[in-house]
Amino acid sequence: MAGHSKWANIQHRKGRQDALRSKLFSKLSKEITVAAKMGDPDPEKNPRLRLAVKEAKSQSVPKDVIDRAIKKSQAGEGDDYEEIRYEGYGPNGVAVIVEAMTDNRNRTASTVRSTFSKNGGNLGETGSVGFMFDRKGEVVYNADAGDADTVFEAAIEAGAEDCESSDDGHIIYCADSDLNDVSNALEEALGESESTKLVWKPTTTTELDLEGMQKLMKLIDALEDDDDIQRVTANFEASDEVMEQL
Image 1 (cartoon, helix red, strand yellow):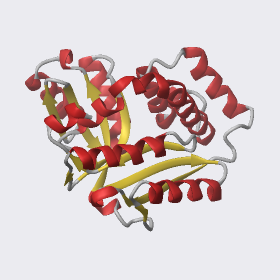
Image 2 (cartoon, helix red, strand yellow; image 1 turned 90 degrees about the vertical axis):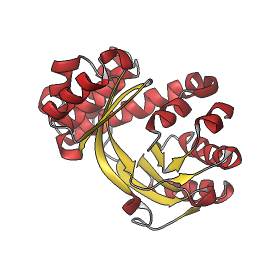
Image 3 (tube, one colour; image 1 turned 180 degrees about the vertical axis):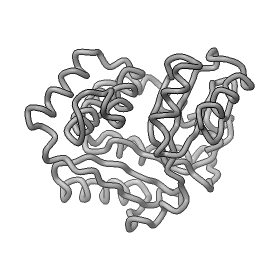
Image 4 (cartoon, rainbow, N blue to C red; image 1 turned 90 degrees about the horizontal axis):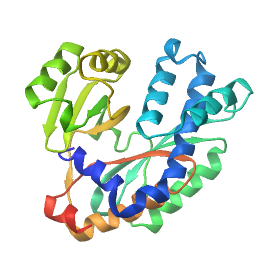
């Protein structure tokens, strides 16, 4: 979104990062366990696991936590988890995609539905907002990885589709199925990325004022506080002035 970097700023605002860190570790660990369960426990032979480990490392998850999450998959944990995507509308008609990993579909559906309704939104059918997003691979680099031209050239050379550079850093997008190959090629050219993951990239956005953003953040915060929810994406747009006031 014009502002994917704005989204990143939101994730790090107001000391919420510390409060969310243990939850984040647990969500990243769950993804590692499930990825290892679905394929080979060796990240080099399992692209999804490799990306999960890479993302965990970028968020400073300790190596022993990562190793323990992989071992859990071999011990039979992660058998009951299923991945579910929920779609709905937040306040002011903002489209919201919620990605969950749960061992109790009914519990999660009930929680997500009530969270939407309590925060001025409503849960829709699968597909109700998905058409407003493209599934993409996303690789993020800090600004010091290189200037815009250098990073753009490395991105195209690696097989990426697009690169957005700003003072905050560089966001490189590729086809979802190419993420493993593109991130490997980028790593050789630019070094370790700040983040590598699959995302829902909005194709259309809804502009929000300060009040609208505050209402949307209340919904997103409530969703992210649930242990079953792995990731929340919304197609909002907001000015820098509004973002600074959040």
